[in-house]
Image (cartoon, rainbow, N blue to C red; front, side):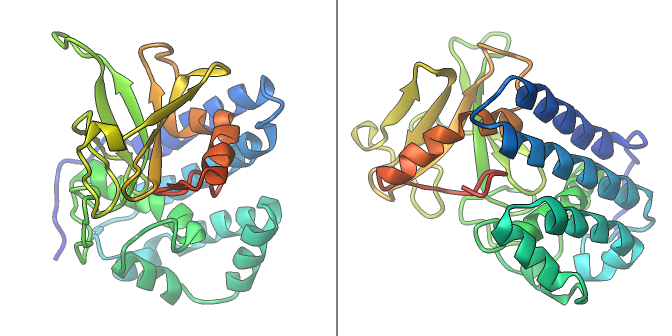
Length: 269
């Protein structure tokens, strides 16, 4: 069944991907340690912007990817081609292996848990579609098992941020969905890991680096997972999922300490 809602402004989701691409290019120009992942992310965002534009122009979206993708399959191929040509070796090989296949594998991923940890490439392809669904208020079908994930699409959170709002005594904590980009407020003292929910402050350490004052790793000793959070009170221009890549060295440090990120960043970590 197709759910019809008020249409968003033309190109709204495509424009969001274009803004992310511009931010990645801006950060890459001033970064030595993260120039390569930021440059790759910028190109991926541009390819996703083209895909988002195709999805936005598609009529009668139903929220079931297997049913809807016929309307924008050609644009999906553009993202796949970029990953094959410009991605790191592992991603490039995965993309090339799928260039001549049908989209059954993507539809199967959509019907499952929708995590980049199970398939980074599928997440990259499905994101523009999921964001358009969210913009139009069309629930994904079938509903994903949330396990503490996004209340709209069931996708996992991959980045956090802290910012203040009018009347707030302090910065509020938000998590952003890795699939539909939905944002939700969360308890400041609670592990956001799937199936965890630890609330003992002694088991929820956070780590910071003088090199990246706006970045914090919010970890959990119970599940040994973590999420990265960007403090927007220090730089309101930041786009958390993009600025995340500038501090990739912190993710490498966390891995050395035995922590696993709940959902991989665009760098695949």
